[in-house]
Image (cartoon, rainbow, N blue to C red; front, side, top):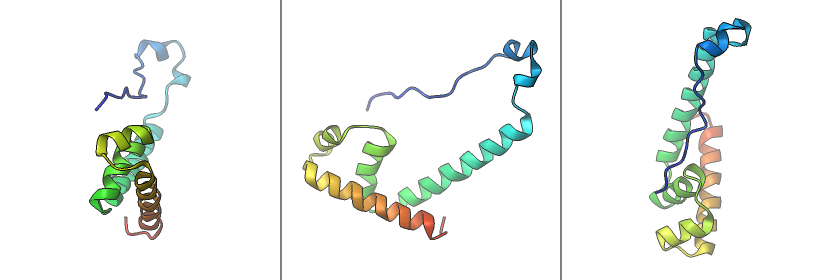
Length: 102
């Protein structure tokens, strides 16, 4: 599987030393991190509750960012079956995430 570069950007302390108002407050940062962690955990739980077939194609396509043709090649699943599994898997994820279970 190809390595995907993170969207995170490292910022040195000196970048904020000239204008500390540009630095995010610790309180806001912690709140955002908490919200993101909560959402990531909900998504992981919902994903883990899918069937193995749906979980595999969603993981390869939506999480890892492979194209449909690549997922088809990796898994040996026909393109039509792949698209059907993606559609049904996403619909099930929506159900799980909107019913309040996670």
